[in-house]
Amino acid sequence: KAGVTQTPRYLIKTRGQQVTLSCSPISGHRSVSWYQQTPGQGLQFLFEYFSETQRNKGNFPGRFSGRQFSNSRSEMNVSTLELGDSALYLCASSLGQGTSYEQYFGPGTRLTVT
Amino acid sequence: AQSVTQLGSHVSVSEGALVLLRCNYSSSVPPYLFWYVQYPNQGLQLLLKYTTGATLVKGINGFEAEFKKSETSFHLTKPSAHMSDAAEYFCAVGRSGNTPLVFGKGTRLSVIA
Image 1 (tube, rainbow over the protein chains, first blue to last red):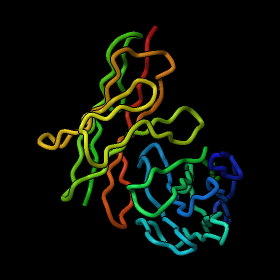
Image 2 (cartoon, rainbow over the protein chains, first blue to last red; image 1 turned 180 degrees about the vertical axis):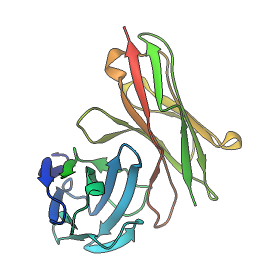
Image 3 (cartoon, one colour; image 1 turned 180 degrees about the horizontal axis):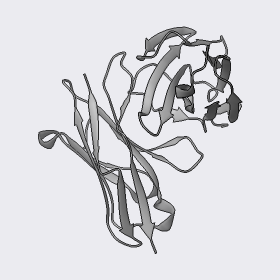
Image 4 (cartoon, each protein chain N blue to C red; image 1 turned 90 degrees about the horizontal axis):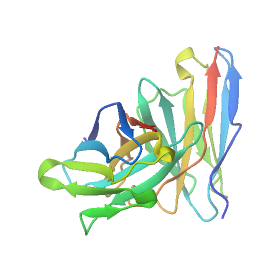
């Protein structure tokens, strides 16, 4: 089975721009979670989608948004980029909703904001 | 609210020596506990998890962890370190219901030849 894929792997954007990141879960997985990883803050939960609905949201500003499609693929969008948004963005998929299900992580998208 | 504390942001061991990475958690309800490993430029890979049942959990690559409720700990061990174990390790806590995983800050493991 193919693993979780994330595109693009690397991205450089300028302050004020917006960006869309994509995540394709493992086949059959219906839940997708997004995390932001930075050296200072570590891994922070952004949001979780299950069956095209946002089920949980972390403590991030409204500039961070996401969606999930009927095939479980997910996208996250960051508008009006700030320097502090530079991070590794990780997506994880699981069979079901909630932490009792194992999460399988993709390789991440490295976003650099200049 | 749940939280995770990983003692030591960097641990260095000699090849063949015991690996011990410490994790303490805080949770008001029975926790689910996880250890993940992250190699450079890669995502996280699940090493092992505890949900219910046996408190000594065996994972991949020879790692194991023991859930100690009285100490609120879930330390990760491996009897003999290998060079390929050099990576960053994350402890995480979850629980039943609609709550996300909470990760510790991570411990970078170096293995010296």
